[in-house]
Image 1 (cartoon, rainbow, N blue to C red):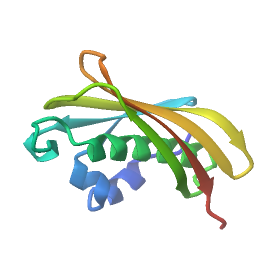
Image 2: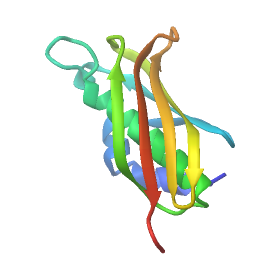
Image 3: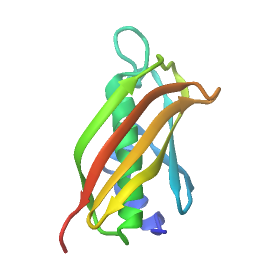
Length: 132
């Protein structure tokens, strides 16, 4: 599994840090990240903006893609998202797992849930490892 300390430290100045993401768990077959949703993550209806949930899922799936591709950077080629429940302020978690690996291409599934375990969004995506 990829060692995340150095990567995440550099990422604090990037979109990861802007969102307020943090690594929760990094295992062989899944990765979980967290975010404390504050008013800045909400839309005008006072629920977590869908873009925040999509960003969390894209981030966690990209991290898992990179981990299983031996640290090779990966980019999203396609992402499909279903929003199934509104999320409010508080702790959110995004977990990704691999559905299929074929050469440089990885297909994954992710979901965002809150501290109660309620799922807010589900996504599948395909990533491709960039060439060295």
